[in-house]
Length: 274
Image (cartoon, rainbow, N blue to C red; front, side, top):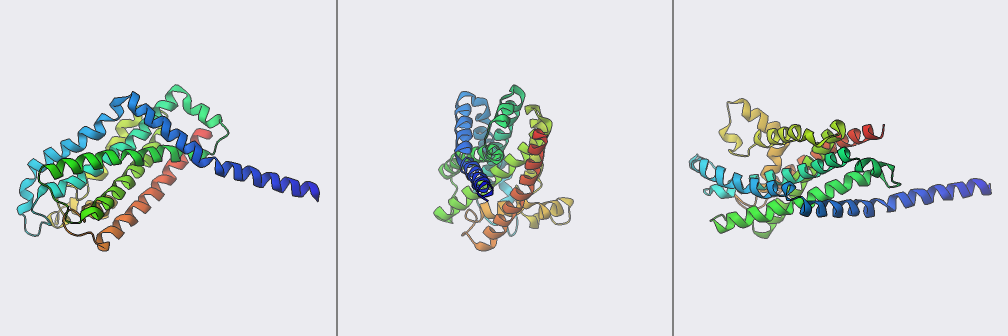
């Protein structure tokens, strides 16, 4: 009886120790990734340059779409800024997957797998890094468009909603990238990851509203694309006041994306252990 009781206590202690180790390990991996970003600027520059490029390119080329009947805003910057932020956030998620691919190639990831640490922490560390990186395009794009004539009717709440959307997209794209990298086991899978991200972003209401796509296959693609709901959430405070009718579908879409892509990434991770 005593032996059984001691064994149960030991098992509970091991479970507690493993659970307690998730946060410290994840934070340590996030810190390592942040240091790596400073040492390898090439992984950081696209996340800054590309969102600003989208603002300039789309803000100029699509400025006339604001004249369409029923367009939700008369300022094209208010329309393209949230889209550019989410594009930058997707690059933030891509960066964490790229780092995992590099670790797989140089053998560091094998050492992580051999370490007595919770497996889920290895994924959470990468996702936390992705979420933190989402702050960068959000701050840079919002600052740039405000200085060049955009407005934020929704005020501070609109900025908070945009940041939540950006962090959700960063985590989602990070999970997509990790799932691919865990299967390919190389950072050279980056091309496939980018194709998936760009396809999801552009087959949405990134450039024009759904009402202007009716009668085309793009309408149906954008309608079922969860990014459309996330963009509606991100834009809600830029084209008017923040409303639950826009925020709740966006949050729901993020939850579904993270759940499905999380399953995809975890399955790929388990293949590494096998």
